[in-house]
Length: 188
Image (cartoon, rainbow, N blue to C red; front, side):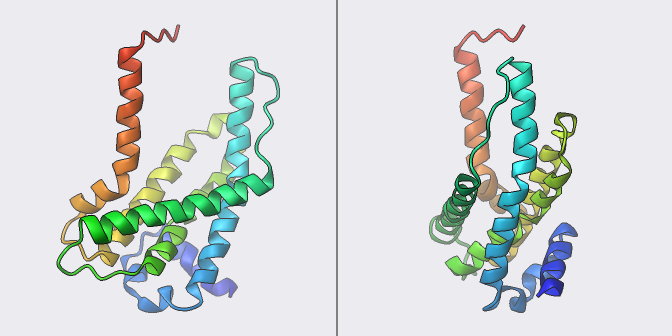
């Protein structure tokens, strides 16, 4: 079992396309590996979150800001795993399928969990100085998800996959920019 987990982690970190194409990596036992990876990711997310809360508490003079409970972190991770999977399945297979798209919800559920592996590197964000690494690991996560989705949804190019995968983030950024444009926020 540990060798399988190690194989999954190294293949995802290397962005190995052949890993996504191999059907045995998404077989019967893979759902258990996916659940395990989501739980490990939830536990690791505590480290950068506490660094971020420590930084924000000191920067805005809020004192010690208490983070969420372990139960809340695990439940939120599981819920967000299903929300992200449902979004990708609906948009990728129902709204914008290719002529060759034939993918199950279960496969995308496992894919989303596997692609969380680069976020494990957030383990090294032990200080607010290292918070920039979260951006790098998040980009790595998105790249692995885009590669996997392109293979699973049988898209011809990466443009459609990138737009499907990053649409929520793009919409959120446009919303944030619109807030800053309409209000006179002074950062000095």
